[in-house]
Each structure stands twice: as structure tokens, then as C-alpha cells.
Image 1 (spheres, rainbow, N blue to C red):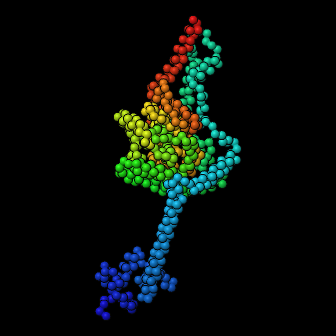
Image 2: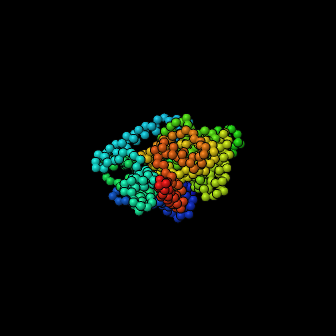
Image 3: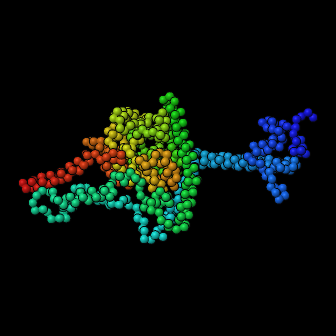
Length: 530
């Protein structure tokens, strides 16, 4: 024959040496070659049962050893085929899943219509939450769930001003025989207001999540959890599985696609020359990507009074609750935005969006930036072909229970103001972004593991600055209109108190108000005496 071969044992068949690995041909015996080959493939020597004894494969005779080798190889092949079948099924499932997402969610979102999936989901969700509320009321009859009201806190304050409350307090006691309008009992008003603010002030509670009147089956909203019933616990567990194992992966995929397309699309459009085609593509890319992101958050948005939508060359001002306010408003139209520069994920989005659309990002602490922003805003408003500017005059996120002081800079430009009121329904998910507690990624994950984001948007009639009205008065008038329409508390406090200390001017304003009451009272008496 002439071909080199080796034998299994002393009586086994001869096998061509080519079947033995080259790295093992130097071994003195064929059994050692076979042993090393088996160990390299399996990690150990397989054992087989011979009668009532168990021995490794090297101790078998040649025929049994060959049969055992065939069994080992057959098992390896079966495992390999099973793994291949498993991964093939996984890939097929992912393909079907992707096709369903594209056909049922992304395509309708891109063109602004719905197949009714979100509406059906919301109906089921409302029924489930109503059942849970009734179940809690039935088990805990002594714990009454309060009806919806404007009061949300530990301290219920009077809505009257200092003059009204002090006037009522003075009418309830006998008039002092001599002296001015100041009496020691006036201190009780200031004592009461001070204690109320120590217990629960009107400002800091606006920078934390709104407390719910009834549990919405989210652990994060149930601080004092108590076992109610087995059925309610099972429904809660089912909800956790649905939100984290089904909805969250789907939402993360949609949001990732929307944000990725937004970055790529706006960057690509930014390289085009400044023609009408660029403006049209920029608007289309922004609206399309924002609609996909809205589907990624399971947003259900109700727009009211669409005939009052902001027009080009105007300024749209709205109350600010969350970064997704932009997603909510841009689902119904495109805007040029003005806001604080950010880092991280928000910074990437801001820089890419500014390539295709005249957005204005600035550093609030830099005075040069503020003057430059004012100039750019005036130039933008004077061009009636540019998109309306979207501004959040509060300058920070508020928990959607109130509207705080509007910065006057947006109202000094001149131009038409289009107020917009945004009100979220906290029963389905908390949209407020507490930037001091959560970064952007953590906040988005909380949104994607909520039930849904449900909100109402009211487009209010356009407003203009009146004669003799300064920017501060105009801002307060617009703020009160937004607060009234959205059912929010109208506060005069600055949202900057979220990060800064109270200015001395606020204290001086209260002192001047009270001193004017005392001095005014003395002047009135002197005039009456004359």
C-alpha cells in the first residue's frame, strides 16, 4: 500500500495516519494519539458502560471504541443541528417582529395616521385602572379616594392676597383706640404663612412628581404599599411583565430608530444648499422622526383648537414639564427651538438639529449669549418665511401642576405670541423630568416603562402686546391665560429657585407691600380727619 497508517490497539483495524492530527503524529502510540484527539474535542475522555462497569473509551476494544466514537460524533452533530435550528427560529422571529413594527407602527407614524392599536390599548388600560381603583375602594372602605380638585398638598392655603387677609383679620377684632394701622396681632398672619411654608411651601413642591389621588399600579407611585388582595397583586405582576418585557423593548427600539434617524437625517439635510427643498426636507425629517419617537413613548395626544396653531414668523410659548414637550408639539408641526445648551445625548441631538434648522441654543449664565439670542430672535421674527419659534419662558421643568414666572426676554422682541397649554394625565405615567435626580437616559427609561403618556394640547388665540403694557405685564397676562386653560396654578415665583437661593428683592417686595398698607392707612385717616 505504501501509505502510513496506525492501528487501534493490537488487533484493531488499521487507519490512515492522515486521520491523526499533525500535531500528534510524533506520539509513540496510536492510543495516545486517539486519547489526545478525544480530549481536545470533548475536554475529557467519554465513559461508557460495559456490563456493570464504567470505563473510558480508550479501554474498549477496537469495534466498541469505533462505535463509541460514532456515538460521540453523532451526538455532537445533533447538538450542532439543534443549535442551528434554534438560532434560525430566533432570526425568523426577529424578522417577523421587525416587519410587524414597520407595517403597524412606523409607517403609520411616518404619515400621521393610526390603525387603532393605541386607542384599543388605552381603552383596555382605562378599564383595568378603573377596576383596580374600585378594588382598592372595596377592600379599604375607610380610605376614601378623593375626587379631583385643585388642592394637592398637605397645607390648604387661602387664595387671598396679603391686603385681603389682613383686612379680614382686622375686621374680626375691635378697632384699636389710638395709634396707626399697625397692631401686634398682624404678626399672626406672618407667623401662619411662615409655618405653612416650613411644612410645605408653594415652590419646592413644584419640582417633585405630582402625587396621585389613586394608585395606577406603578410601584414608583405607591410609597406606602399595602397588600390589598391576591387578584390586585396578580394584575400588578402581569402589568410589570407587560411593561418591562413587552412594551419596554418595543418602545426602546422605536425610540432608538427615531432618534437615530433624526441625527442622521438632520445632519444629511444640513449639507444641502439653502434652497426651498432643504427647508421642506428639514420639516419632513423633524416631524417624521418625532412621530416615531412619540410611538416609542406610547403617546396619546389630543389637540384642541387647531385653527389657532402658530404660524410662520410668530413665537409659540408653552408651559414646560419635560423635554418630551418638544415631541408632543412637533407631532403636529415643525418649530425652530430656543433653549439651554446641554451635553450628553441632548447635546448630540441639539448639534445635529441645528445643522438643518435655525434652532438657537445658548448658555443661560453667559450674558453675551443672552444678548446674541435676543438679536437672533428679532431677526427670526422679522422673516415671515421662517418657522415659528418654540420657547418655554419658565426656563425649567415644572411638575405640570402650576405655571411659574415667565421670563420677560421672549416678550420684549415684539411679534405675535401664540400661547399653548400642555396638560399631562399623571394617571398613566409621570412626564415630569426631575433633572436634579435623573439624567436624560434614566428619565427616558422611566417613561418607556410607564403605561403611556397621555396629554391634552390647547392652541390659544394669538396675543399682542397692548399699548402702555411692558414686557413683564404682557408675560404675566399670557401666563395667566395658559394656566387657566390647562387647569394649572398660576404662580409668580421664579422657576430659577429650583437651583438658586431666594433673592433679597422678593423679601423687600413683601416688606414694601406691608409698609404701603400701614402708610396708606395713616394717610387715609389724616385725609378723613381734614
